[in-house]
Length: 317
Length: 323
Image (cartoon, rainbow over all chains, first blue to last red; front, side, top):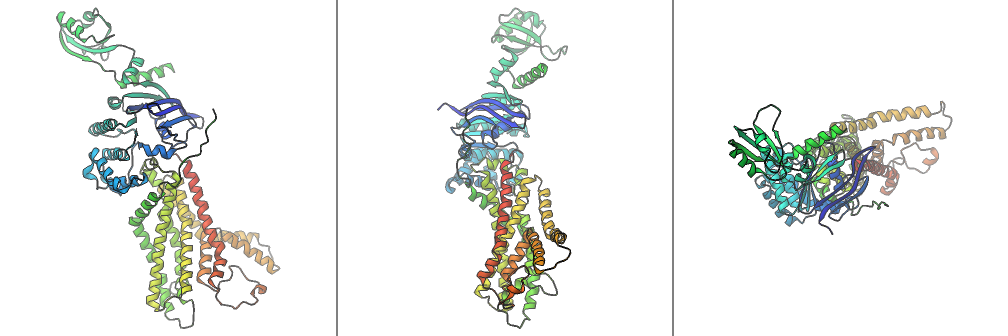
């Protein structure tokens, strides 16, 4: 068998005449973090529910760890952990009781279950509230409890639907650390989100959803090259010199444009080159008598890719 | 490409045990259960206490004296215990079931639970059986309290056949509760709002409890000939009235209870003189004959429970899990 944990071919979901998910192909490899991105209503959650066999497919095939979620949902659900959007737990029960219920549904032997529950709670730093009622938990704690459930389940694949929405920056950071922890444990992670910069920092590959179709797929850098064009952008800020004039002659430099809104006079310039030209640029500025105040490598931002892509879509329409 | 058969694998009852145990434990420890028990005791204790008071003054020979605790309606309070049960049980059952499924939606636990290796079948059936077991425990407790009070206050042990009839009555009461539990479960599947679901279940109960008897008799009168010339015509009209009234589970339950607890009952309709030949008025039937008499009522209750549950099941299977 190949190294893919999830293989989707021509997956289709129709609600009446609308194509919520329109013949998508998707492969998720063992041990990677894969991001499903796109605006609300683009078909991300529907795709996830079909992967789990919680919604019927209208066509196409899905293979999760060698099982078909339509015909063998129990086998799939035994091996895949799912954290729904705004996950809920039974408020009147404690964290331990909630996980114990899940453990019973999974038919984990009682003696193992207690150990696995406390280990899982340890791994998400909730061990101290194990016997507190979930009603007292904050949103971030609930999300972490959801991760603990996946850890306890010893899932091979974790599917997280909007795991960071509604969390404060600190809680988001902690949650992303836990997601990296899952990856280290060898779990393939599928994250759906619209919070791009957060997702960018953890994802190995992403797929951009648009109206039920996958518009773009690949690593963040690949997507940037595809949408923003190839090239190596850097940011230069210097005083006492005409930057655009000075840099035009540097080998490899393609364009030099002012950064930020026109006429804002920030003094910063965006330089696109076909390779890393930072050393040459620094040298040229200093030798031309300018004082270099800033020189930064610009990572392609997913946000930029996303905005640019949808802008192009709108312009084309 | 030929589509593969979509026969799903694995037992639909995988995980039924844990769901049942959780629902049962939740019900027993919930504040709602306390309120319902209080309600039952208040509404059940008065008829029982007053009928016991009256029965202590009875001096005539009555071989089924113990069963009279359930059925006698004292003058001071013209409600028998059985009549009280006729409306307590639906309220209990509705109270246990009206938010069974939609509260899982609203707490956003449904998709998480369904992503565990269980089918929806197990979830719904586990919830139903958990509620039914809770109802059975509550009714059995009530039944034991009434029997105990009878022992203490009448100073007379029940005969074996009275206990047997009492036990059958308990089973009929649980089946009656099952119908209403299934109905409230159905509403909890249909409506996302728990308040709407509770309102609809209570509305249905009020309809059957208050309105349906009037509607049934109005329809019967409408169909009756203007002048009744023979006993056959009269019986046909009466039959129509009975058939209509029996659409209400309350009627079925009352008839089953009357047949069980009043051993003299031979029929629920009128008897022709020809059928009365050889009958000793007021003589009790043996238990097996009483059971044969009420068998259609019991099967009707169980069938109603299954049909309503099946409807809830079908709707639940088609429902989208996303909130």
